[in-house]
Length: 173
Image (cartoon, rainbow, N blue to C red):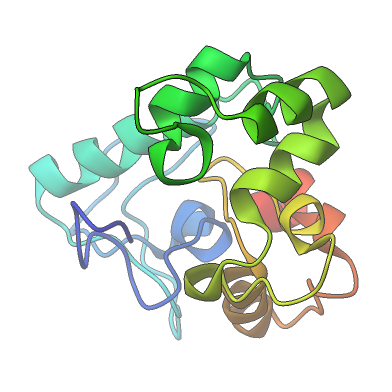
């Protein structure tokens, strides 16, 4: 679920049940490998069955996962890219990267995650290190403590204790 596409997927906004055959369609769209359209009784998340919404969901997954080639967010950003993508935290009043963005990019991905995701109420990141611990994972890039908690509840696994599980096919899809 995104700000620009509210309600695109079910209450979780996550992948496993959606990609494991829980999409709400009248029949399979794709056969072999990834089946979209087989209904799983008791599914907790689904994609609205219109072809446009399914296409949008699959396009978003393809974008977030670099064509299904990555399962964890790439946080190797240059300072100028940080300023463009995260202006509220990484761009000064003149449009340049902040000193914090420059330093985080120099220090590496964990520092970048801390800069852009730590202390984010909207993500539920309340403890130091939550930004790195709950960075984007899985093909849809679940991000933030609150989203890991909700996803874990749906998948019946403790993702707060084992966030890396979203990097596996069993839980990421």
